[in-house]
Structure formats: structure tokens, C-alpha cells
Image 1: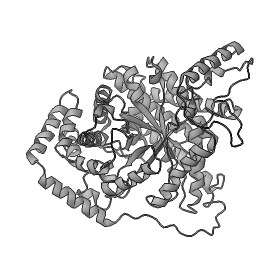
Image 2: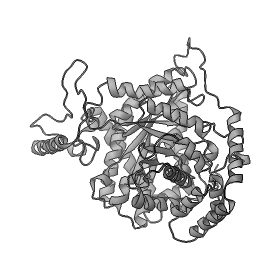
Image 3: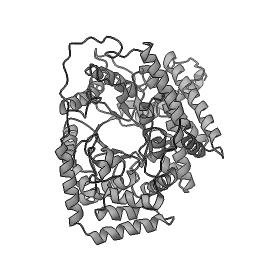
Image 4: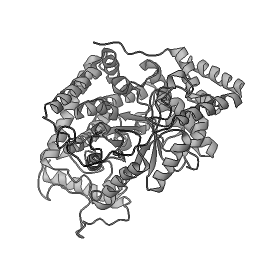
Length: 557
């Protein structure tokens, strides 16, 4: 790019920056030196390839979505939490909000993630242990008691039974008197990554995509601020993928959901802004920053050139980040505070829109109140003390970071080509479905995980406290344990709830849901009626399993 084009771009950026709202904050260094809101090539100089880097707030968005960076608005502190029953988790949420958290992120227990009720035999011993137990809308009422859903953004990390859980959330909001059209938050709903990595599905892919398409239509029409899909690379990375695989598989899944929306006749400029992303921030600092920068650039280009998006917001890749759970170690767990801080800083320098920081004891158990507070304070120290929020994309133009960003993009494009070649019609969706069926994704992730494990065992890669610097004076941590009484109480309350509800109304609502499922009609209104009647998650998912069957992964050797 020549000097005149760079100068014109800087002037465009300056006009947008001047017109944008900025925070009332001190944008100087610790020593009192004033810093510019963005930095670029020296005035009057050319920079070959600068169109791939650009200015914050304009295509290709490598340097961020907004001209102000974090000067306009800092990232949302969204701590992931859930354990025991809804009452216990409600207390933790109130603690997070009181301590400065900006949004809530719900972790569900394994029975809920698998669409089962707490009193089912398969739930025995699992209720409340890796998240909160939610059996019906009544649990949602308790979960958000005293927390106005109309005013708090809420993320829910669940995919297989995401749609009925979302309907229970809507019913809880209705009962609070909220204007549903003003609700804001994110539902994960990403079923592709379940088949690729996490394995929490209920049905075959096609029925899940039917429900997701219905949800996209409903939210676009009724709840425009709510994001019905958070395309998740986090679980792909936690399963052992490389950074480039995480990037490519995640964006490919996102393209698949764009194709789903288009197949429903939706306007890409209307529904694409409702797609968000969820990435892992691992411990290789610069590689992670490059991954985030490349993600925005790739998404914007493909949405514009391949899918016809024309509005700026449809080109934006908005993403939440969670620090890498898989990087935490049971050995010398206090070291995890350092790992989490480095990973969080990488996410911030990569321009994340919201962030969860893991607690130091999460590799051993659910976080204690103290470790959860340390995780929260980690973000607040980065936000308030380090100065990293003063300048947009402060590493932009670094030879190393730009080379890594370009390499990450090139590797992702190679993977997209291979995925398209898997399909019968050249679409990303067909390639994903074939890759799931053939085990293409899982085999490549397994190879990457095996290569990393070999590097650890040969000491080519070091992990402090595991295969390097193993001596310690640290004492064992006190960890949080979920009492077995939680499960007993949850089961008793569920049994009582079933006995005291209007059984005729429940039966009619479930029968109507199946009737709608056999048509092309949108299923969300019928599912909402079932949730209002206090039909349970297990009942809703169970009746759909009876209609659509269940999915079992083919055995592979």
C-alpha cells in the first residue's frame, strides 16, 4: 500500500474515532506519558501489504471491530460458573456481579448437558457436579432470582439440549416481567463441534440443524439482540487440536451455520450479526494473538466474498474467550494463576469482546469462592493497571505477530479447501457432515494431541511443575466438594414439582410439540408452551428422541 492510501486510511480512522464515544479514563502510561489511540506506519511512508492489517474499525478488521479499541468499551468480564443446585449458583452469580463482573455465563451439570432429568438413572452421581442442575423453568426462576435478566447479559454453554434450555430461560424472563425483545446474551447451540470434539449430542446432525435453524429464525424476528449461536473452538482446542485447527474448524462451522441461515431464506445481513464465537486462549502467547487477529480477517472476507454480506456488522467476528483449561496442572496448581494471566493478556491483545479466566483449582474441582475471586481479579488487574486497554491492537505491525497472523490464515485456508473437497457439492456444510461421518476431524485432532504428548514425554516441550522444576514447598489446596445431598434434594424437588403441576397441560403441550415437529413449522413457540407448563428437560428431549431417534458415533479403530 502506498503512502497516499495509508494517509487516507488514517484520516478515515481519525474521523470515526473522533465521532465515537470514549470512556472517561486516563489514557496515559504509568509515568504519565500520553499515548495515541492507535499506531501505524510513519506518516509519508509506504507499507507493502498494509491493506491486510489496516486500521481498527474497518475491513478487514484485523485490528479490531471498533475504531476506539477498548477506549470505547472494555471487554465484558464474563465468569463461567455453575455448581450444585440453582440456589447455590445464584449466590455465586450475585458474588460475581457484586465484585465487578459484567455478565453471567452458565455452566450446566452433565445430566442437563445430555438432556436428562436429575431423577433419571443415568444422572445418578452426576447431579450438580460439573455445573448447575436445571430440570425445568422453575429451576431457571431460582437460578436468576434477584438478577434482572433484562439488564444482564447471559451466556449459556450448552449445545445438545440448548433450545429447550433457552425456552426455559425465556419463561423465567417472562415471569420476571422482562421485555423479551430486549434480552441480550448468547446461547452456544453449536452442534457441529459436539460431533467434532465434545460428544454431547442427542440426535443425528439433521434434527439438531432443524432446531438451530428454527432458533435463528425466532431470534432474528423476536429477540434481535440475542445471539442464538456461539460457534465454539474452545472445546476443539481442549480436545487437543493445534491453534490453526481450532481456528479453521471453528470458522468452517460458522460458515456452515451461515449456509443454514441462507437455506432458510434469511437475510445474511440480518442473521449474521447474531452469530458469535468462542475461542480458547492457550499459553503460547504470540500464536494466540495471531489466531484472534486472523479469525476476524478470515471471517470478514468470506462473509463478504462468499456469502454476500454487505453490512459492516454482518462482517464482524465477535468472540468470547476462555483461558485454556487444558493448560492447568494438578501439580503445583498455584502456577495456574500465572498461566491464566498470560492467556488472558493474549486474549485482550487479540481484541476479545468478552473473557472468562479459569481458576487455579479447576483441574482438581469446581472453584472455591477464593479461587474464583482471584480469577476475576486477574482480569481486573489487566484492565485497570497494565495500560493495555489504552491502545487499539498495540502489537499491530510487529514483524513477528504479522507473520504469525499470515501463517495462521494460510493454514486455515488450506483446511477450508480440504473440508470443501470432502463434501458432495463443494459446500462447507456437506464437507463438515461428511467429515463427521468419516471421523476426519477427530482423527486429525487425535494426531495433533498425540504429537504434543510425545513432545512432553521427550521433554521437547516443558510444563513447569510437571516435567520441569518439579520441586515445591506448596501445600495441598482446600477444594470445593459438592455434597451428595445436593442430588438428593434436587431429585426430591423435581418429583414434587412433577406431582403438583397440571399434568393434562403438560401432556397436551408435549403432544403439540411433536405435531409441530412433523411439519415445517417453527418449533420454538410450541417448545415455549411446554416450558411454561413446567415440562421437564428430560421430557422434552425424550419425546423428541422418540420421534427423531438418537445418534451413536460409528466405531473406529
